Image (cartoon, rainbow over all chains, first blue to last red; front, side, top):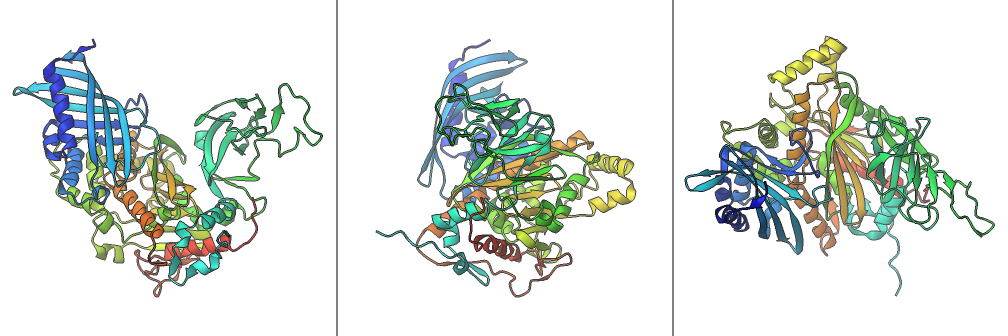
Length: 158
Length: 444
């Protein structure tokens, strides 16, 4: 299956991108299910976050810690902060099973911090469940086109 | 306009301090590439990366691109990744297997020992052109030696044997390998490649720095301390949160429970600072209990106890590696320019250990050494701020004098700090730096 997503699904992804751009970290965390996870692989086609390292791999517990550190605003790596602008497009539904919808989309994120601007882009995958008239994220996987490149530190989630 | 005279390295070192030109002067950097990276034993890779004849991996010695390759007879060569004809990089892949290396430009072809074996369409070269000349080749590093699978090369024809260069630090490699129930380890689980705008020396200067976690890592320590342990984890987050909390060990602990030891040639190691029963000590972890059972079955109770009683954190081998055996992390530092450095962080798998232990290694690597980690990002920021600082007009001297008055001779040669927070390991690296830098000739 790969059909164009309905507007509710696309609106959710746009909403998530906006929350991240506005650095509303706790609101972003609230989008995730209680056993949700977030993954940015380091290899193209990486099958597994357990046997190979990842740029980011957070189960719910680590995601909470990551968000708490960002929200507290004391991290040196975000002094000064990064400003970001994200664009989401090409949203398709790839699978629907037992109330969970797998959504694939393309994204670009420009990050500006201390005289440097970086451009990230790639494919993101969301597993979404419809709850209370909205969505919760069961998991989110972000495949960067340059996942295995030499990089300076990544403080801001995609 | 006259070029600025080359600085004299001796004038950049004083008791307990270093001139900032050591971190910001392109001429010093060029000297370092010739006199340190062109001379010292440089780690180039691990034998597990090239188990079979024809296996190769791309690597570097300083800025020089090299290929570590296993020849048909099993010998390991480290050859310059550049064609003798028009200078193109020959090997474009990170790793692979081949019988020969063929340049993309005009098909010059080299054996896995680097020797030129074919020049297609050879025509009208001058009399001095000799395809059998060792210089008309992907030139070999003159010396290659392994210590228990860790491969080093030197661009100098003469110098100390690898084991003499490593000295007492061979025990840190032993610690890494002996912990494997089968007595073997292998590189596994991918590699982090991260970079910062700062000098290459800053990296090792931080890896044995016991005084920095409370300051640099304050944000991740506080976030982890506040984390609710009832929240769902699949295991990865638990390892991560516990490790971040350990970085917040009280200052008293660093003073009383941890040590710092240095050895000739710039090497050093920091004692372990973990007391978390689920992490390194891991006495109450069921997976660790299974591991100890396996170790005792294979190595005996006494030998297992001896191995596990070694408690070291990072071991620095000057000039370019820092590793830790307890979670089998291995960082290789590559200088790019005076104010730009790249680091490769590898993980090792212990053969014969429970599979879950490698999952914990991956989780540990993600949180401490990952490009997107909650910990490393603050280290990278610190290196970059030092890069900004030493390149601005300002203080001439960098202070590395912490513990200077109280350092003392160590048990196995070298000097140790009175406690773990001494900067003795930095001064020790500068002793080696000055030895290399003040020996005038370029040996490469």
